[in-house]
Length: 419
Length: 73
Image 1 (cartoon, rainbow over the protein chains, first blue to last red):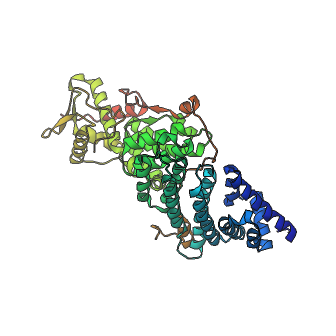
Image 2: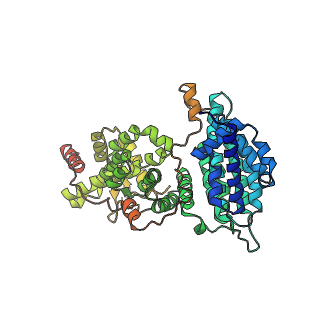
Image 3: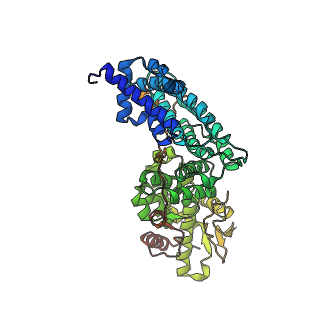
């Protein structure tokens, strides 16, 4: 750090305090927000941090004047947080930031309008990001990481403040901030692997009378639909996952390509499972080529290709939790293969096409290097019939499956395979 | 909390809290109104692929295979 005089440090600190007081007095949420964004590493906050580390007694400056001291409970711990952050002590930076945030929430609760929502958003974001970094520090020192969990509890409290901010008509101006806080909570719960904790906030957002989903900012609606869509994938509720992720996709800001890609990472397996394929162009545009062979396997009825494509990208699919969804595509690939066998037979001899010998299926699978005996094939066919992917019955003795003359291979048409 | 797999201890610790697919933050003041472009960019799905066409390479090979190995009745 270059030499910094006491005088200059003093000037920087009082300058910050003046800007802080002004932002509150003029109800300037935008400026106030910027004064809190520790992790943005903005030049003005970094130079303030240096000044604090030189001056060391900022509390005296805060207490000196009524103009500053009224926000002392927010600013003093905030200064401490910034100092620690600058020195790379993230655990203490988090602790002090949480203290400042708590004091800020007390003030925020008493302000009638929602002018300070932007500052609240920054605090909600910072508390999560600082907690993550603090946990990394704790973990690398062999201590138990617990700050992110703490940040989750803090944000639940913030959610409560926003959800409870009703006026006599039952609707308060701060309620529109609740979805942003919800999305920060989702990020925490997904990271901690405690996604079941999402449930109570979702219930509140979707059923509480004070919330009207359409009223929330678009960026929060998109994020919310992305995370709730992922939850529906985990629950294997594909129609709901399709609806939520499609909403996120069509409403996402186009310039946020990384986010569009993440939505597609989950939406594609969902669409596949209801019989809808992504076009090649889509996979290429968003670099999702790991799905290329899976799509091709469905089109062909190529079981071997499906299995190898799953194996090749196993780690990746397991990590994002879509592996089980993709594995279930096997039944659709069997359906497609049997349909092709049926069509080929029909072209050769239409009168016998609806009788498919199990032996023929065994042969086709053998060609794909999948060894199965007649009993195993019979079992697969029975499942296809049971799941309504095939219509027909067995002539057990002659080892033949007799297909229905009408629509022997019903299409999914956007519905999931029967369970 | 324990990690499932066991690479070096350092790795385990860094892996403890990971969500590979964490949604990127939109700017606080970001607002947008998607019209036609997003539909074109992202609405690229096929639902009529399950056709009766058996002239692709895979089907042709399948046909050959089935005809080469005539099944006795």
